[in-house]
Length: 234
Image: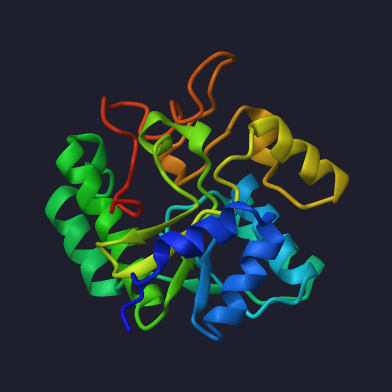
């Protein structure tokens, strides 16, 4: 039976459930086939807490692009220590990174959108595809209010590019709701958030934002684009 079968009815069930109950339902329906990709952002830290505290059978992984902030790497260790749950860290293929740098230079992603997307593909998209292969459900920390590109997303949808069900349990959460939950549950988070870094990716591609700026304005701040890296395309 195709994974896309009865996706609509499953979505109706999930819409009535809390994020933790939704995660539990999917882990029961697809045992050993639900994975969560964390970039250690605030949303992702909430989902990690829900998985760990409820002892859910959901595998957690993260992508180390080789250009992450030290604070992000340190957060992996702090999160594992608090929740006593290992986060699998995946890396880009060495030969692909070496060829990319040889072709465009160490910081060639600044030169064009095409170069930047090539860098994202090598360092993020390809490792993600490896991590998702053979699984049935991909859990993400996407929220609708993060950017206009995500406003029309649903909590559960079919990801055509990766041939997998995608579940966005915090899709309808507001930023204030997110921060309140983090504070109430003493969830570890990246200290860069307190310095104006709302959306945190690779160090060369992320800056702090000013009050009133769009939350995604700090990502690939030198270019005019949809502010996406290619991980979340249908």
